[in-house]
Image (tube, rainbow, N blue to C red; front, top):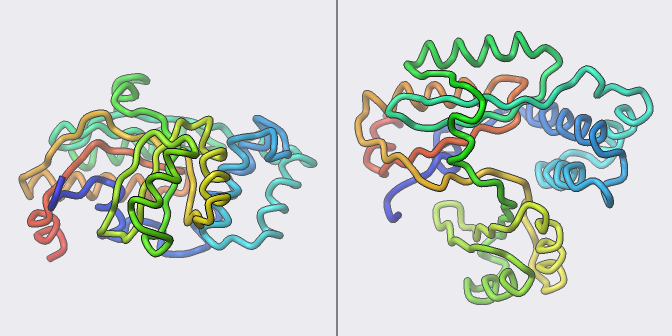
Length: 252
């Protein structure tokens, strides 16, 4: 929708992403450790690990650091005390929030997440209360400098993509895939001479809530930022939309 931003763009504009590389690397390293625990150290046969490695590389994580995380998990069992967890709830305005986390202390993480919802007028719900709203997909981003919209679109569809969006705010094309064919589509784009900027598994909302009031938007953004910045949280998904005028008020 023209003049509107969804959560992925909102958090980039608000700077909700980790400011320090060390924090970013810690999160992606944790993902690689758990992926290795669940599926083994060979990315060729472990989709989750390959996706985590691709994300680490797109963030600029050194290759030796990537390999070190995998080796430690495989050899020493460092992932044994890590659990993949999800949390679900509703924020202000009835916005659905789905959280993915990696933790070595489930009680601590759940308590922290619950406190954020309570503080910012939300409600942490039971498993499944909002999961149905979000569809698992693969997301590939390509810089618009890689080619015309028509060229990249045709290459993406030929490689097996499901959907395609132009994001002029970020100067990228966003290519959506079945999560199981994410790497296949990436390979197809590369073969076509199109460089992939990033590739990851994500969850996209099947419907959105358009927030129009500042007194709803403020606590909602604070809630999402607090969750996003928690050390154990890997990803936050929300079905929120805001128009640019409201975003400008939040920036003041």
